[in-house]
Image 1 (cartoon, rainbow, N blue to C red):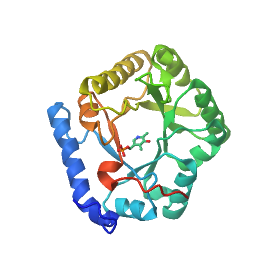
Image 2: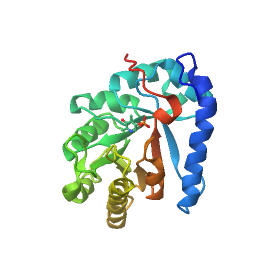
Image 3: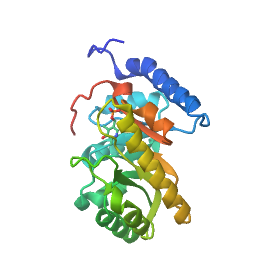
Image 4: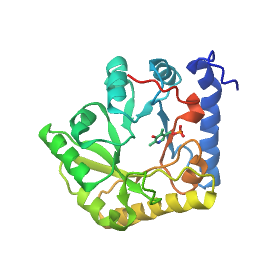
Length: 241
Ligand SMILES: *Cc1c(COP(=O)(O)O)cnc(C)c1O
């Protein structure tokens, strides 16, 4: 389809959403997984209110943002109950308070120290906050997350903190097309998840992995939540609040 700036978000979604849903459904079948076992999180970050409006209008109810300021602006504008708001970007520890006030799920708890901060804020507010532990499965310096070597012990520790409900794990694969590299990253998250689930009563089974470029591989390796921006909304506009 045309990426003309005159194409509205709603028009774009009319074609893009069925295409993405179809891609997810096909990947589920190929992987021998149950239909509907992968949840689509629409990543609206860096897109204006109009984008969120179109997403809601198209029936999308899981929205992902990566900056607290932008998440706050969108939640304030659309209301907390219009969607499940996913915080998927790096979280600064001094903003944990604000994060748990607006996000329904934090995907990017990337260290035990940050987990303790979130736990403290949640306990203080008498809350139980849903979180995922972000793991750096690629070893790339630029990526956040628990390092694979210490992830099991640290995430086990995290699961004992008050005020947190650890729903599972999240990762970002390297930005490459090499399927073997992607497979290694996603499979290592799944394996870590399997050992944590086996060892810890009630440890969550969610796997947040897969974006526009790698969602087929992620679903094949067990993803339960894909975070998709570009395939739905086109290139990001650099909108800032
Ligand atoms: C931006 C972002 C996405 C979406 O990426 P696309 O390639 O546009 O689908 C997913 N996950 C995280 C953590 C992101 O920051």
